Amino acid sequence: MNDQTEMHLGGNWIGTPIEDLDTPALLLDRAAADRNLRRMADFFRGRPCQLRPHFKNHKCVTLARRQLAAGSAVGMTCAKLGEAEVLAEHGFTDLLIANQVVGRAKLDRLVQVARRADIKVAVDALSQVEAISRVAAAAGVEIGILIEIDIGMGRCGVPAGQPVLDLAREIVRRPSLRLDGIQAFEGHAVYLDDPQQRAQAVRKSFEPAIESRRLLERHGIDVRMLSGGSSSTYQITGAIEGVDELQAGSYATMDWRYARMLPEFEVALSVLARVISRRGDTAVLDVGLKGAGNEFGLPRIKDSPEAEIPSFVSEEHCIVRNVPDWTVGQAVQLLPSHACTTCNLYRELYVHEAGRIADVWPIEAAGKLT
Image (tube, rainbow, N blue to C red; front, top):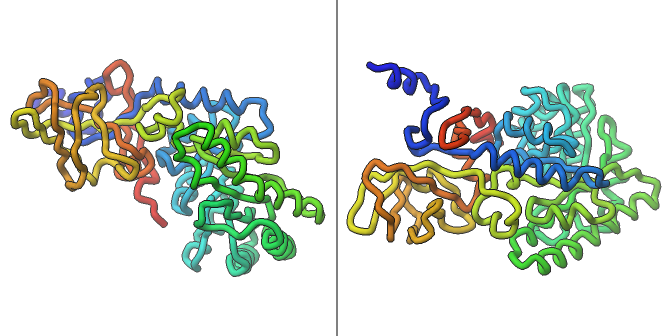
């Protein structure tokens, strides 16, 4: 066994060419990702609205640390309690779970996170408030609460106006709870390709959230934050008076679908695959549904615009037509349409510079669905 084989078997790929990796593998262009982090941080520098990066995009602790180090960030956003647990275990102290935390098992875990970090969660029902207050008081911890308002997505959230005030009054009188403010997500507008239509939809959607904030303040209830937004709306939501935090996620890695709306950011994420079969102008790659998110469109081949993926339905295979002069065994890079679900499929992120592996970052929260 030679030294190179021993090195690869040991998992140390540092310094090796990208194409030598075993496939499929998740890649991150470090220089491109760093430029994305700086660009987003620079936009929010000195603004009333600050950045709260969304961990669900990449689920990688190292990348989360780099997001905070880039500046303009007040803490991290999580989609699930399991993500918050991972961040708390690694020393992150300001966390928002932009979701409802329901069920005794989750609430028991939530109070454990509250012992290590300032944790905030979204609510949209009195029953959630009562349950969180009960377990937090019993554990002797304080948990921050954001009232989620439905501003048009039709998912979670209370209606704007009086229902927000009614729920806020219940929260402020409950023990071990701290009413931090409001959450509102314009998810129905984030994939509008036309910039003007997107801006119009976002601003109109946030009007009831801003009015609800003013309603609480008129009744003497302090609103420390209104948190929401996304990468594709950062310039819009981040400039609305009364919005304090922007929960952008995909900007760190990007995917081809988001890049269509945000050309100022670079697609830093790709999936390395290998040609395992070739017939005429058709090739087969060793990656399928289990290796690339495709909710927002079929994957694309990096640097080969003529290559076409007619469908993406196999678990372990990807058929590519109109391929260039590929040979069996050749490595190619696939661009997924959804970075968030792609990262969740892997346990390691191979970071590269100048065509070689510069580092390997664990994706500690991959598969954290609870």
